[in-house]
Amino acid sequence: MNSDANKKVNRLGIMGGTFDPIHYGHLVAAEMARAEFKLDEVLFIPTGKPPHKDRRDISDAKLRYEMVKLAIEDNLAFAVSSLEIEREGPSYTVETLRVLRRTYPEHELYFITGSDALLEIFSWRESEEILSMIEFIGAARPGFDAKDFLLKVQHEHPESQGKIHYLEVPALAISSTDIRARVRRGEPIRYLLPEPVRLYLEKEGLYLEA
Image (cartoon, rainbow, N blue to C red; front, side, top):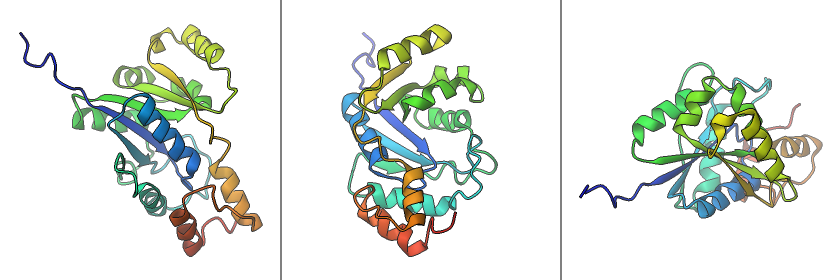
């Protein structure tokens, strides 16, 4: 009998994004995905230079990394990686996954993202290779028609069959874009993101200018 037959396969969740700033929507999605899909750990990977973002005012990667670090410090199942911010040039998901696949060869990998971003996957560099390395968890607001959406994705992209999952997350009305706009307008952002993150961005003077 194969001695590896009963070997436990660890499950690693990966949450990428600019996190400018990280907020409770990100954290709730990560925690719910961890519980629902029995993930052993969720690794947050702040993007270095996002190829699909046209924002020239994106905050310095080190500041965004520090905000993630502050946000997750009280959750032992969460970790943060500087993998992408240390890499020169645009941050392509396929390159990150190749590194993670080598680092965690026996793990099942799950990429946690917003459900509205799932269709964009197929425009990413080497999307077929990405689907061969990882499964996707699409976090969506309550009321989102997940069934029809997933049927549409699988009809248009048969190679995604069984690779894309749906997760309803109640806190996804919060957005980084709205938080940045609130800071510029002098409006309150408390309780939209962890207090250490709020104090840090206030100390650094982030988002005060358009």
